[in-house]
Image 1 (cartoon, rainbow, N blue to C red):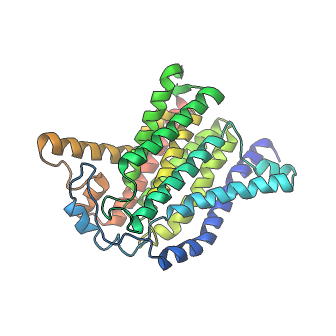
Image 2: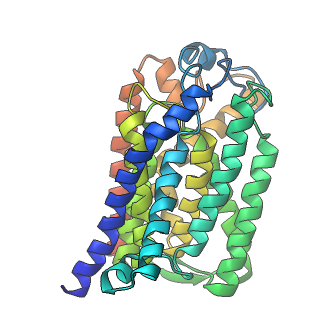
Image 3: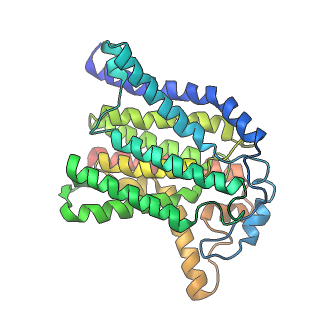
Length: 352
């Protein structure tokens, strides 16, 4: 078997393993979530500016109650179990196959796995506080400031890791490499905070899962083309977990991804973008996340300075719901847009 074939096997095998592990653990996870009623006790939320969201609350008054949060456990749980299984096989049953399948490596996967774990834990705490009533039922669990502080700290650790263990160069499309030097840390922090802010795309059955799966698959393809095979395997392991999650999250959703999923995925996606040295393509490859963040910002500034709204509801995917689009139509069109922009991103990589 030639090296290229072995690399393909190294990527697709963990993907399949992650998917089937996700399918296998879902009954146990959902059994626990439903038994303990791990959902919001009252529907509703407040906008980032602290004001009420009556249109959103009316649209989702029957969706948020009775459907558990914490579904992101399926995603990162299946991915981490796959990492552990392949690592143990390589160490206890060493041979050419098991050692090849093990994709745990310091220069490619330690950092994204670290961010995945930290985001998952903090997000899980936030979800737990919200569903158990130990925090305001509308405002959520941990405050936005506390969550942003966690992301800030993680991003600082990530920037330090790049500066001391890896490198601080990025690729500028159609130009070449650019060494950021001392500017790397603030740029890394801003990118990670920006990607995390797009995590509010969660909220419609299947929407976030599909968008994240396409984004990670795209960066996995980029990593593979750069011979970063371990990183490609990590990306596609998350794709496998996301597909298992989507199997149960398509309408009607059995559970929601919530913060434990979105925080772990957004922080890891930012790290993966820097590991491929293609963070400047994030606004294209993850365009729906960018559109989500921008729509929130536009709405907040418009309400503050113009005293009127641009969208009926923000983020923009809820605006489409408010004007009458069925939720499944919003989801499918977001998936299509994600695929189109992912293809554009790949074209830029391969010709730029």
